[in-house]
Length: 457
Image 1 (cartoon, rainbow, N blue to C red):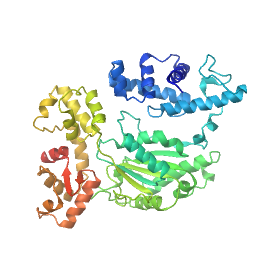
Image 2: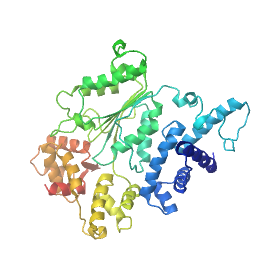
Image 3: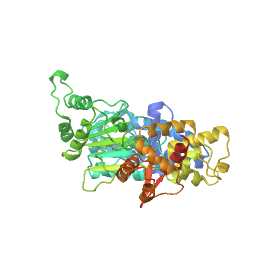
Image 4: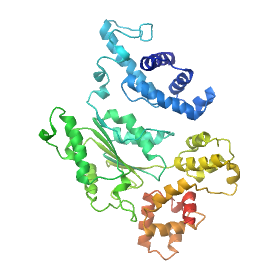
């Protein structure tokens, strides 16, 4: 499928939906997408603001999604168009009884094929032959999504190829966990019979949670039966009988404040049994747990021979983080890499400090001279929310880190003599699981942002 054909078909789809043809910017977005270009490159080529290009793109994809009959985004646009071409080609051949059809000729609408949809679309794509049941009403919209190609590939491989049953996606606040999970679900949801997203602001009891899921599964299995006549099976039976993808976002709300990471709240300990059951029993489904900290029973390091995985999300690389600064008009500052490193490539942290610099007209270059760490009030609120979850012992250990200018080893921390070795080890493990500290070889370090925050307490 060449570029001209793609643009012609996309133009016809947009016209069928909106009554208007592709404008120059929409055409440039599709052309750049087909050529593998990022929004940054597309914006440069047409001399347009990148944020505006992203906004136009975000409105274009839903139009194409409706016309193509599947969720379309910048990542899968080419493959979606190729699938559509194959399906419409097959149906046209069946209709006219000839061996070749010029889809992009003048008569691109075969009779009785309105809106370019094949008449039997459910059977035209082998990946969508199963009935799909989705409850993604709680899934947030995908806003700015920065390059996470490697992480997306890792999660996709774990789920679709290695059939992992329980995956935790962790990271400090603002690092982009939920955005990554949304992008992942959009790309792989059609591989499942059921796709469910639960945002757990107020975590339901285990009985309520399992009831909600089994009710969804049982109603979808027997849509013509009344609820009173439906016999709901145990949750694990549905996971065994069907291929299900279940995302639990904000899973940290299961756990206690003021305790080590992953300790369940009273009356929620039975979630431990559920997660163990999902891990140990054979089934064809996947639970993805997204949050600031994983359950205690989920190790940070896992074997390739087990159906459980953990991905601890770190900051964006220089190229991806640079897009944030460019959006805020800070792309030309000296030592841009230093600013990104100082805020660990955290999208939320960078947006916060870049907004402050932009609104006050501060010289970012001058700030970088003496290693200044800016903590806008909105960033302080985010840090405080996570800091308040830690135990008193963890706070004590972080105070030790805040006094050190260089990474320290375990022996140096023991010199404080106020914390017993076993308690110190447990505190370090918990801080690591919360993504507050990083370990390189035998050295531990606390991020400059957290050091600055703790010093100001």
